[in-house]
Amino acid sequence: MRVALVLVAAMLLAGCDNFHAVQRADTIEAYEGYLEKHPKSRMHFQAVTRLEELYLDRAKEEETLEGYDAYFARFPEGAYQERALKEREDLLYTWTIDQNTVEAWEKYLAQYPKAGKKRKKKAKRALKMAEYRPHLSLSEPRTQRVNLAENPEGPLDGWKYEVDVTNQGESTLTYLALTIRWQEPGHAADREEWPVVTARWPVPMEEEKKAPMKPGETRTWEWTTRKIPADYTGEITVQPTAVAYLGEE
Image (cartoon, rainbow, N blue to C red; front, side, top):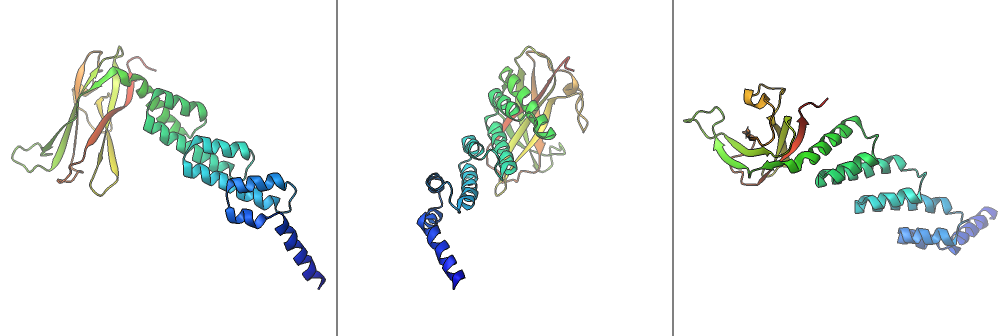
């Protein structure tokens, strides 16, 4: 009988601070209001635990840096710090790739100077390209069906893309690569990188590609593939993605 009375008293006590209503609402505002009104409630730990989860869920749902920063400000030593840090970095990195500007890459590298080795290398490479991109002029891509064996009598079993690239900057380029991106019907977008100029490449290159590209020079970038199906009618994008200068260490 004594145990039953204690349980009833405990339930009544919990009901007095209306915690069950807060749980039903299950919002940041409800839990924040509850903790402000009942800072010493015996449900304090449960309320804080759920509140932290809601802050992180909101940040992930909104996909904003501000959302994650709000989480860190509210829970500087929260239980989900590691997860939140990774999600925030991934979000900023994805945004930076979409923006692909000098300012965006500088922001990412400044905020994550200790990023993973592979990602940091890609970020520095992209920043360098973003800095030189205004000095490159690219024509509209030209597309045609081709025979990949270069047999004029053979079947048109591939696609060929060409882009004229002009170096309008003051630097002589020892490496320049463009990336083509396309969408196959029923498949995720695909991409390939291929050089305009390079001294070294995993496969043999034409001799003219090995010569540095001087200021004012125009070269034609070519890419052929059989991966795209014959009924492909979607658009492609081609953009410069890597560069290196003569005399660079």
